[in-house]
Length: 107
Image 1 (cartoon, helix red, strand yellow):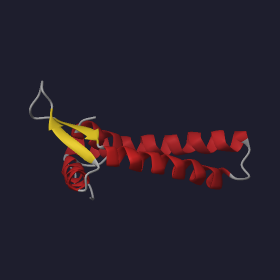
Image 2 (cartoon, helix red, strand yellow):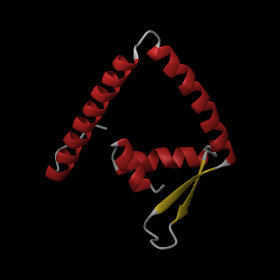
Image 3 (cartoon, one colour):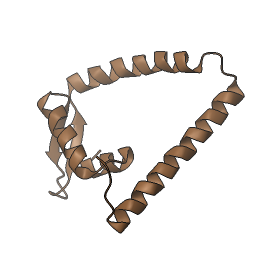
Image 4 (spheres, rainbow, N blue to C red):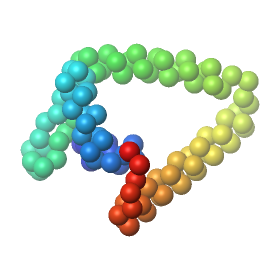
């Protein structure tokens, strides 16, 4: 993934992404390399340390998901997922519109 794609996916500004990437890189979780076809773009790759952290996070998230969904029916899970997806789209549209108009977006 590249930094711009990461910013877009997380719906955060490029400056915040650059700072986070710099910190993750200095902590040894990712490698940042210039894209061979576009030197202005940085490609991000997980290191072994980053892969190990991902595995730990994946296990944690499975456990946490089980905690959060305890007692929910399949229908309730589906409805909740739909509602959260809808809220995420609303947030994405809102920030996209703010960027287009040049409005200040809180960091």
